[in-house]
Length: 362
Image (tube, rainbow, N blue to C red; front, side, top):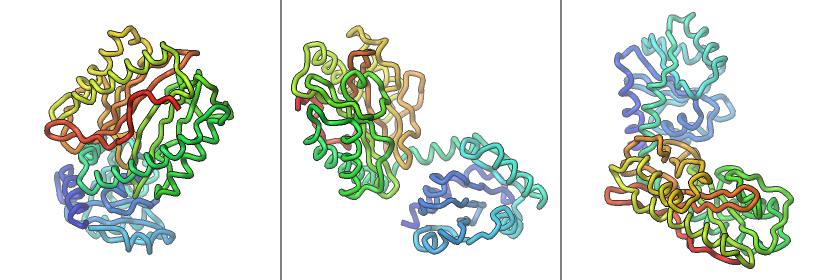
């Protein structure tokens, strides 16, 4: 495992042009990715040849057991202790993630370090490099994501037994999260979407006390976290019956989802994958009712690079994890979304999801 984190840190060191430069990671997820300790409120210092994880007393013992390829430091005053280590390494310049720190916190660090002769820089170049490194998953990460998916699927299948007329959306959400934790999830990947009836036209509808009725669509967007890694899946089912219009729209979305899935492979553009789904929906006359991207990256965060959008010219690479989730949303009527999670391979993709996609009527 240590080799895995050594390789990640070495990749990040590419941004350092001189031996007197270092990176100070403040984003909790990035700290976990490069150190192996995912539960820290500390920071990680990476110089040209050494790395340090700074945590307070609450996390020190746990970090010593879990952190890889770095020295764990129990800080008393963070800026002072980081400064001391920087001076011992002759570090003169520190780079911070631009998207992961507030202006106020950056100014606090900057002012403290300037007093010690250390310059601070907020760098989008650093953010881009981290994103580039993180979006290619290794075998260990892929296995964890598959485990998260398996947990979520088992919980979803158990929860379907309670999707029936009279059931409350909020009760379904609570039951689904309970089963995910029962089967080994740390938590849900996000606030679960379990919505019914007209609310299914809301891509990110919020479960409430609304009750399922016969003839409704029921949309479930769900995911589990296992050892820090997320899963993400959506299924739409009908309760007791479905109108001809409901069946027609469902099949259009299914066709779009399958068409996009076939286009996923190493070397494809994200925009091409998006357009593969979007064109099917446009040609069916529902283009105005599909307003979000076809997919997004998944990993330690539920939304990360790459974005599978018609605006994105990102080239898919083997090891990237993306979702394929087109939808049609008809205001005040109903909506349909079908989502799989895919790992890009040289010749196509591996689908993490083992759930059926044809319309199920419960």
